[in-house]
Image (cartoon, rainbow, N blue to C red; front, side, top):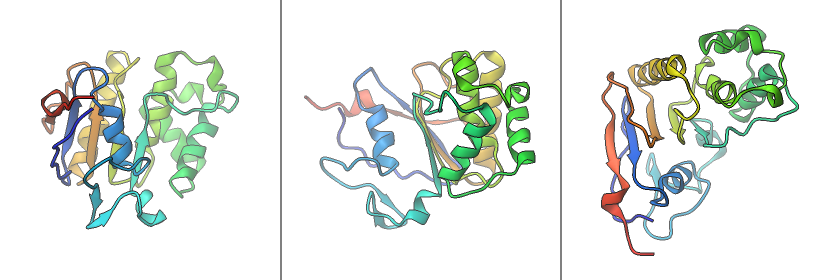
Length: 196
């Protein structure tokens, strides 16, 4: 686990969380998402303490966990529609189709998720990032996992677009993050490790 972190996630910034297994990368993302409370210290957003924030604030962020949280018996398009609904938004058929096309999985729109490869599942989960009016804060746990070279390139384009529009991203990755615009700020949790 970690301690002693003082970080302000800024608009237009991408933060890459690094560290060995068990250092708390996923735990930190869950803290940022307001899903768990810190053992000590506080997580603040706009001066308010997490997780005691109003529901409208939660619509400002998207958390995509390492497990893609897709419903196997629903189609790719239905999963994307469901994901939008979780954000309190309704996505039109055209918006769903455009998001899937941006991830090169438009031909899978009606396929049940249970038939997808791991890479296709990851693209489906990440297609939520391509919907119109994306949340201003993205929390992504190992988003590069299972992606091929094309998928990595698409994700980097999405991350750059998010930063250019003034959004923020915090992501974990065991592999090097090939993003160059902007170059991610690195937070190494190994440097903040505390004894168990």
